[in-house]
Amino acid sequence: MARYYRGFNSHVPAYPGNQMTSETIKHNPYRSARYVISAHDLKQLPVDKGCEVAFAGRSNAGKSSAINTLTDQKSLARTSKTPGRTQQIVIFEIDPERRIADLPGYGYAKVPAKLKAHWRQVMQRYFNQRESLRGVVLVMDIRHPMREFDQQMIAWSASTGVPCHLLLTKSDKLKRGPAQATILQIRKSLPPSATIQIFSSRSRQGLTELIERLNQWYEFVSTG
Ligand code: GDP
Image 1 (tube, rainbow, N blue to C red):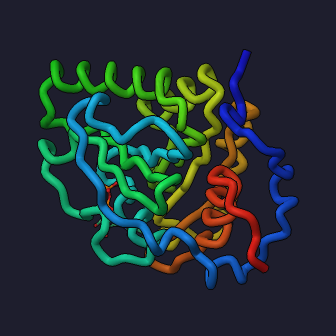
Image 2 (image 1 turned 90 degrees about the horizontal axis):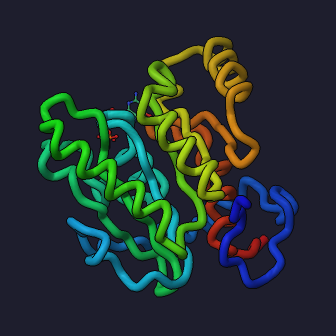
């Protein structure tokens, strides 16, 4: 049985019933995010309480830029990385009850096969065991979506009941027509627990939609 909305202890209105508007950006609660720890292993993660949302994506997809845009901080998540540095789960705290987990970027050709296999296992355990995990934002370059590991992430999220939100970023690189066609095409193959949107860190297109999705997962109520 899927554990959708695992751990929620109060009634959460169906999205987008929270009645949030573009005013949301003004009240963006993610601006308060601050770095906590880079964990090499699940044991180093903060206590498994409250709400955690994970950001996942292939290396170079635009995940760090998306986190920086969301938190309105230029370099909270690093945007230039070496393969070694990416093999960590980086935790940012929004408040004592809410965290962002920046999962290791995958797909680096230079990472040895053994290390890749290790991280695949760590990720699988993270999905299966992390009780506070409320959702996964899966970041993809809109020009190169749904690669092998993206599909693996979607499959894990479907099998564990953790909702997955696909963030098709770098939308400024595509015209509106092809961007919409890509969304429609991908939507057809998604499980019911997955949602999808267009995003750009450069133009901030889609920022409101992302904030509203996260507000729901983190159970922030509308201030407007
Ligand atoms: P990560 O490896 O997934 O964390 O990717 P980064 O955030 O480091 O971005 C990889 C590259 O894509 C960098 O050169 C970014 O400047 C660029 N990039 C990221 N997001 C966007 C976007 O929305 N639009 C454009 N045009 N470039 C982007």
